[in-house]
Image (cartoon, rainbow, N blue to C red; front, top):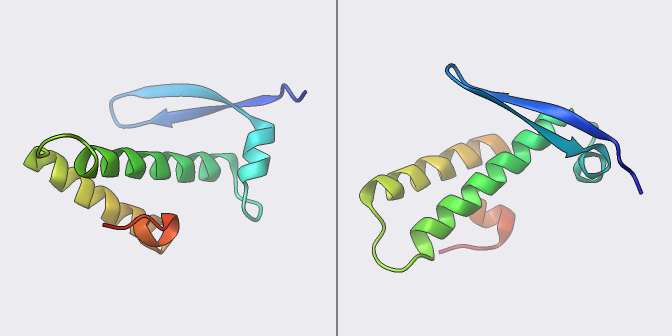
Length: 94
């Protein structure tokens, strides 16, 4: 069993966090020689888009307008990042 990991640092202007990720998993998810930060960034963007979509489209009741706007921005940033929409990439469209 592979036990190698790499530390990834996530930072903003006012905060920082680190996570340990499996190098074997990064290698499996890697598409064409991307760096570890690029792979983790792609997974973060995908995860954030999935969560935003779920909160706005699959929660009970009407979502708060701020959440709707945050989801719309996230989807715009997702498309800018990946070059295709969330619906195109996942096959899940509303």
